[in-house]
Image 1 (spheres, rainbow, N blue to C red):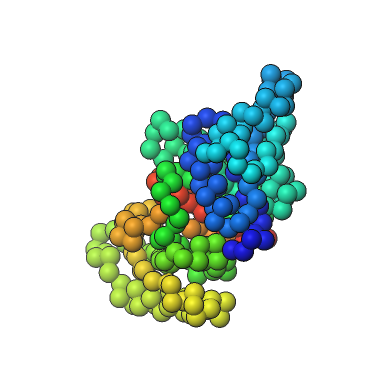
Image 2: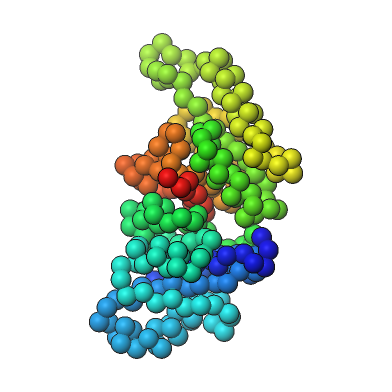
Length: 275
């Protein structure tokens, strides 16, 4: 990205659980030459609400460098709606959020702030789960061959131009696991392979971008295949498109919130295709 990159918006509740998201947002804003906007929802009627200067100072205190250039945004309404509104009003290009709780593996902020942002924000949402050790180097992008997964791949490639791109498709075998089924269907595997190769050969992708792509084909339970592939390619960022032809939005943050976004320990970027 250039020095004219749109601002990066990060949400914090001033607790330690938000530190990783704040650190990642600071790193991204610096790398992209973008303005950093730090968002905090103030409880109406609270002492912080009555003392905005104190609230601003408290928000600045969570930054790695409290004196660093950053715009502090205080909201006096529920965080989910306020984050989306603030991102739109300030022209942000990315919303960064952290985990909700750290008491259980995979116990992340799903169904509230992140869920609302993914469903309503016009920009990608990055959920940060790991400590920051540097720039993202290995991206795992899932695809169902839809336009939304193509948008997710293009968006991630542009955001992180130095990262390797691993594109994964997981295909199903009808009646796989039923008695008499050996789980092998060469015809389906060959078809999936052809479709995957055609997907990465799409004219939307430049030759430079294609040279960064490695394709991966998996069969079985999506969660398991994604997890295994992420380990194999040393992925530090999982990229998911929403509104795919398989209903990816509902799959990720709806009735199966326990799935990909929920259990994965990897930072996750969600890219929403406009209706």
